[in-house]
Length: 435
Ligand code: NAD
Image (cartoon, rainbow, N blue to C red):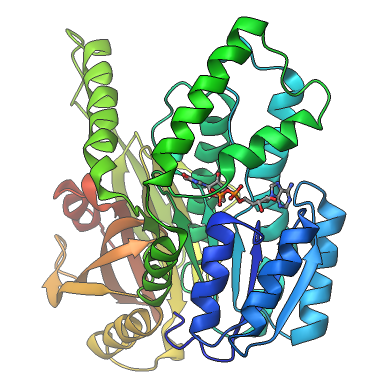
């Protein structure tokens, strides 16, 4: 988590105008050195001059984010000049084109190229360097409220939903690393997006080909949107919120809380439609069971048939030898791992406490709701630990673990689930363990 921005380095795409420019100012005022990237050379130079007056180091790099080579060059040049990059804002973007029936393929390619591939290219060329740096870093992707609420603007929300999805995946990948992730979903902000998108479109053959009547209507729409944007949140205010999000490791940066009821109603509609689909269908609760047996050390566990055994074993945990992994939709994993007890060489309680301590060290915001000795059905002494992770990636996760010493091995049987799916049956599964 970056708490102190002074002397650190930020790279911002789409920095010659609007939100990008606002972010550059916000970071510069915190004492950061800035790399400004954009396709608009004239305004790029202007913003750089303004920022230099604050007394920080500024570099400009003409970059079309839809071109992977140019983003690779941006990364090379930034690391060459400053030796490190702490914050990357994948912010460059262009506006939508209206009704889906009128949007040309060229338009789709252009908007997805800038708004989606621009973000992908940024991640591609900066992420691994950030991870390898061991410095505190943060990637900020600019999506939009249109990344959570699609509306009628076709290619634009499509691109912004993709940015939310990429960011969520990135947050999983970067969990517990030195790289934080945020996705910014603003409502309206007072920028040049309408004017810029219009100008860019004029220079791109085939990007905008609606009938004359539609062009007229869109001019009126554009004027009205410009009026609305003129009274909207300033990029400076938005930058303050982004800085707060980085400092507090906030993932979803919903800068316009007045939209939250709309986001909720989208989820209510999803729920309502799902219930309609299942009306009258009886969901079977009867559960058949399978038995997993392990030869050395010998134990068996009975688990519901709805768990699918995973082969080859996908877990990649250092020091732990997973002997069995099964998964169940949605997102519930059963994991049996065997650890040579000589690794700890201590009684069960001390070994378990050592493992729990390690989890506490690496996981953020966990709550150990129980960690105590118990006895299995067949009388074997064991240890039960229940751990709640506020977030694993972007979701809350709850896990239950039974640990047993057998034949010089520490056997840990765990079930991990999204906290919404955690239930007491998990405990029954683990307690079916027999030696
Ligand atoms: P803006 O037009 O003022 O600034 C966008 C900048 O991106 C411009 O300087 C432009 O030259 C640059 N750009 C466009 N295509 C580029 C490319 N291929 N490569 C590099 N730079 C390119 O608009 P803005 O509103 O500041 O937009 C910034 C981001 O905010 C966009 O991703 C936009 O979708 C998003 N957003 C804006 C609003 C809003 O109301 N303004 C709301 C939600 C999200």
